[in-house]
Image 1: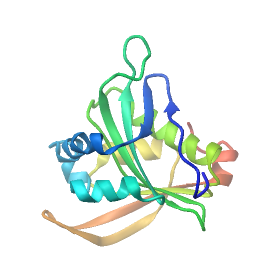
Image 2: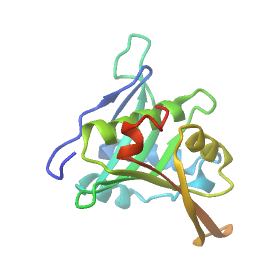
Image 3: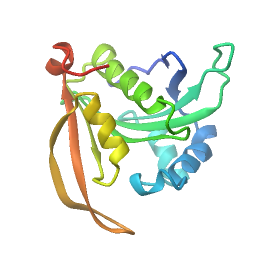
Image 4: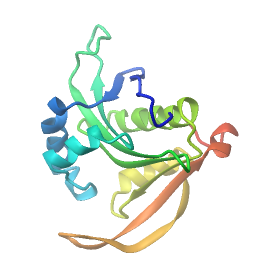
Length: 182
């Protein structure tokens, strides 16, 4: 994706991934605040999410479950926040949350976002960070074949103390060589 382009919706077997609008912010905050998600995410304010929607360097995305007829009208079951660095061709997955746990929606969403980054944009590096106690997220990123770049020790101060952040990434060359399993 170039700086002046708009994202088109991504369709997977069970999901539509599309840009969020202001009407989706309350749902996004609910996803962030859910007890199974809140320890692993920064919880944004309504105003912060509005700014992300307006900022061409961010994509605030919703994951909508397809209805039984395959239509876009299904419920929102997740979201992601992406930061785009157009100069260095970096796709940073800043946040991702799924409400329906254990159904494979996290893997399906990650696969779609990685494919989108490398097939529809000029991305050279896709990366994210994860807290060490997010064992489900770490298992997913490693099962996809993402490279563990390292640990930023005590990089973030949260209510629960100073937290490390583990960095995972995929380079375009790795994606093109089939190193990543999407």
